[in-house]
Length: 120
Image: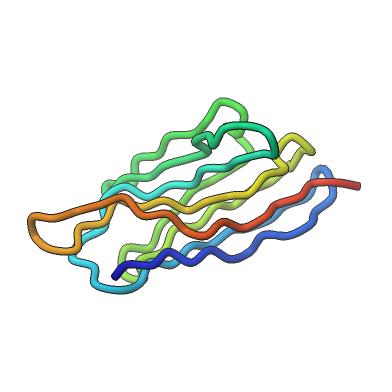
């Protein structure tokens, strides 16, 4: 059983910063790509940022230059540092990870989501 648990969401004013963290636990053989997605009310879930095992990153155009994704392989964690936040960043943020639970078997897992609200 693999679990992803997010933390760090909350209410922040426009222009402010917030850091999200996600920790993977359970029977983990290897973790491949990790990432963050978000879903605003009434909209589809969208990719925010991903990072692979080599540390290569990919960002949505809307967050480039403002958000930074990072991971700690030893701790099985992935973080999202968010700066210059805008009201349009308001959404539920989900952690995602491609995890191998045996040498040959792998699956995508999702966290439960954490609310980020950007408002004055």
